[in-house]
Image (cartoon, rainbow, N blue to C red):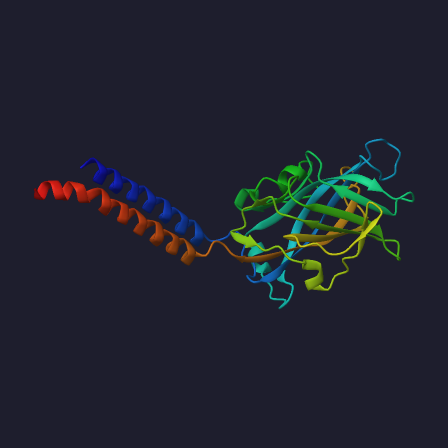
Length: 280
């Protein structure tokens, strides 16, 4: 009788685990994204230039950090707009990037994710829907919601900032997501190529093209900060990801049926000797 009880207990534990997985697969995402299309998250924010060596030039070892607020959620292909949900939800970001190299005239910068660097997004609701770049605790306000998505050390990351012909600067980055709480699987692809964006860039003195990554972003400076007491620049940009459903419920169900049948087969085998003994 002991094998039968063990089998029954195992089956109950597995059933609970499978139910939890299926339940998770049905959990509504905090932020709804267009599925099967590249999502464009447009943002505006504030950036501070942390001049570590005090030479007033952006060079190796210096840091750019700041906060952003998503102002629009849109499908890049169909242009379907998902921004209405931002009336009740706040999608904000906080970032910290290190300069790892630069050109001799400082018109080209290269960024890396060193220890402590990140670009994280948070969903604010209720009391945490409180983004205010003018507040003394602007960094805390931008990151006090539910952790939604993160680009941190450990995944692929490459970012270059180049001065444009009109004098403005354009920061382009390729990144793999290291923290994904969006409720979607984020597909890796040649996102710049798909979107028709220029992917050619220089890194370490070598020319490079597009990369297959889970996210890209383009960031630009819009002028001196509106809040000069704590930031250096006004910024704006786009963060792009390719979301698909996660995880497919039918896959979980098929997996459960397969494992369940396996447990049943083993349970029958464990009962046969006992049944034969009883018949004798």
